[in-house]
Image 1 (cartoon, helix red, strand yellow):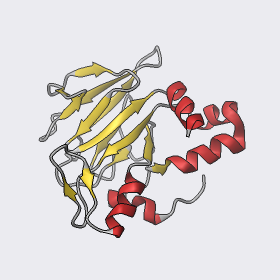
Image 2 (cartoon, rainbow, N blue to C red):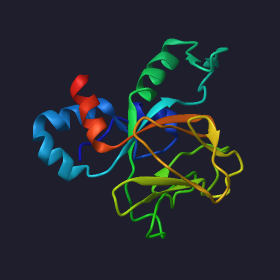
Image 3 (tube, rainbow, N blue to C red):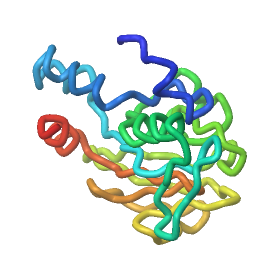
Image 4 (tube, helix red, strand yellow):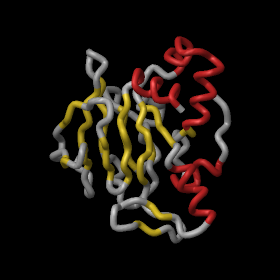
Length: 183
C-alpha cells in the first residue's frame, strides 16, 4: 500500500487507517475493479463531518466553516477521507471490527469524547454488517437514532453513523466502487 501524506491525517491525531479517497480512485484505475475488490473486500466509511480543529467554527447547520486557509485545507482533506471496515492485528476480538480511541482498536479515532471501545462492526454470514454500541459514554447513532447500549442495528449502504461528533457514511463495496468511478 502507498504511503499516505501526513497532511491528510492531521485532523485524526494518529488514525493511521484513514485513506484519501483520491488514493483509492488511483488504485481502482491502476488495478481494475476485480483486483480492487480482491485487495479491499470490505465496506467503507466515508468521513462526512469531523469536529472543528485549530480554530475552525461550526455554524448553525452543524457544518464546518474553516476560519483560515490552513483549516480550509484540513477540512478539504478531512471530507475526502475514508476508512475500510476491516480487521487488524491490534484487536483481540475475533468476531468484530472495533472502533474507539485506544490503540488496540481496528479503527482508531483519537478524540477524548470517543470511548476507548466505542462500537463494533459485526459481519454476518450473509456479508451484511451490524453495528453494536459497546456502552460508549457519548453514544453511537445510525441515521440520527441512538443505538441502545449493547444493542445492534443492521447497516444499509448510505446509513449515517455518528460517533460523538464524527459523522460517517457507511458504504458496502459495490456502492463505494460505483462512487469512486463517478469522481
